[in-house]
Image 1 (cartoon, rainbow, N blue to C red):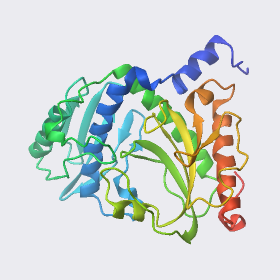
Image 2: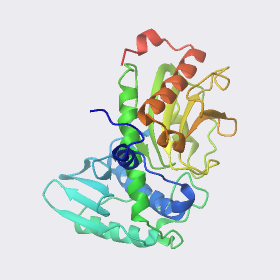
Image 3: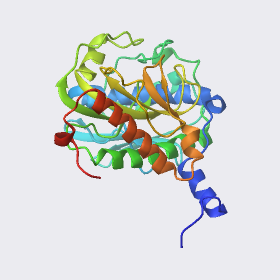
Length: 315
């Protein structure tokens, strides 16, 4: 039996898949969680062999939260996972050792010290650069007493959106046979992203991102891309949103007709924006999001003269 969008069952299901996440209601928790994710992401970055475009630093959506996946620490391996169901940070080693930290309101400095202590107990040497990246107020982690909020209900909502976006992004990714990133979370923004490549080199990126070396940005954008993603808001957009951009931006990209009607081009950010609430409130959220992803990629690929016959296949 099909279920109507306006039925109580459908409403409950969609509230689980695409819950409300007004940034103003959890901005402090979001800022704290952002810095916690940076600490964990930096541990993965320092322990993992480099991969082009900095793909070795990212986190991944898991059935319970976000995970680093396996990190080498010879003679063993370990994983760090944010469990956003029961609200723990879990460190698991392949020799059976496990450590847990409760996710609760606490300063970044306290989180950082406890995590470093657990790694020492496990004989894992994982030094990191102890400042956040891509934020203006880059307070060192061990001195950050300002960011100390954690609202578990809103964090769980954030994760549920990541699960849904990850599913749709993976479906979108399946129709591209050229070089394409995994669906992964960059902890700098933070944003869940998927990036397609034309195969051609790009001009050097101008850089200028706060507290991020230009060399990092230039490696990330060494080749032409069409990139899309989701982030919880901030940086000129005070609400959660999906985005899509091209680098370098080809002539005519900003004026291209894209779908759905709720999407628009931001001249400040130089990317297309689709407010998350437009997707959440749609009769078919997955369909609307796929429409946005496909139409903005079409705009980038057509304006940029990509060899689409060689790069794509039917979904």
